[in-house]
Each structure stands twice: as C-alpha cells, then as structure tokens.
View 1: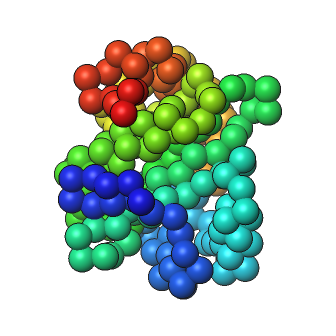
View 2: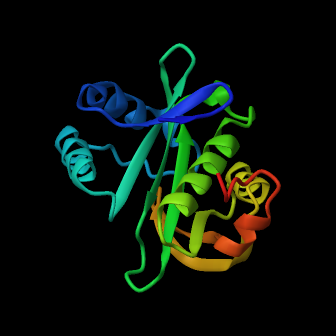
View 3: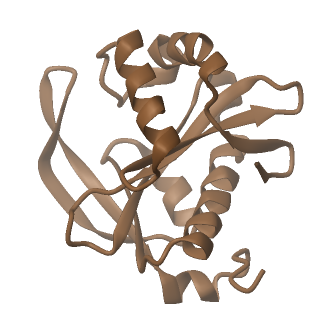
Length: 182
C-alpha cells in the first residue's frame, strides 16, 4: 500500500473485479477523451491475473478513499521494448472528484514508487491534445512536454493527436516533492 494525504494506492484484488469493471465501463470514467469501448469481464480478470504474477509489462493501483471506496486508478506499463522507460496512465471514476488534486498526488506517489523500485530512467505520460486537465497533471508533476504524435490514437471514430510528456530520473531527483533518498 502507498499512502497519500486522503487516500491510498493498492493493488487490485480478485474480489475488486466486479466493482472495478462496472466503474471502468461507466461513462463518467470514460470522460471526453477515452475510448467508449467496454471492457469485457474475462479480459479484465485475465489482465489482473497476469499482473499478479509479474509487473514486468503492466501494474495497476486502485485509488482508495478514506471510506474504502474505489475512486480511481493509476497504472504503468512497458511501451517500447528497447526504452528504459514506463508509461503512466490514470483516471478517476466519477466527475465530482475532478479538480481536487487527487490524480496529481496519485501520479506523484506512483512516480516516486517507480523511480525508487525500478531501474528505469524515464517515465512518460501521453494524453489527447484536448485533454487540458490531464496535461495539467503532467505539468504539475514535473513532466516536460516533448512533442505531439500526430494521429496516434483512434478513439470515438477518429484519429487524434497525442501530447507526449516525460520525466527523467535526474529531473525527478531535483523536484521539491520527490523523495529520492527515502
């Protein structure tokens, strides 16, 4: 478990799957930028089962509030095989929690965790160029914009551009909120 100010991050448990599936498939969780594709129960179960054996390819943490409710998730995954890097993704399950800094704090916690526990040099966050809230999270966590991947994602019937942000290990070590030595 990774402790935050008013929530904690923990791995997904088998008993979480039915609620998690409902939350991930709810329109509020999709927001304006994620694919409307629905996650199948068997696909989620298989993915979580694979994660429980190794975090080499993918690892998910639930954001759990003080009342033990699942309010969101943060995750990381390997993208390009030859990159010494991970990509981070995140989301809240309900719109009424947006704008409270929860995702920013969760990304900072995950960033610390990854740089402290993995021999990596780079973390990346990618988002639809219109997703200003997600872009704000990346900026507030110290990530630097590296460019735009034109037409990189297909969602909601269209190809969309993606903004690419990254944070290198030596940059993380300089951030006021980072805890490299702890």
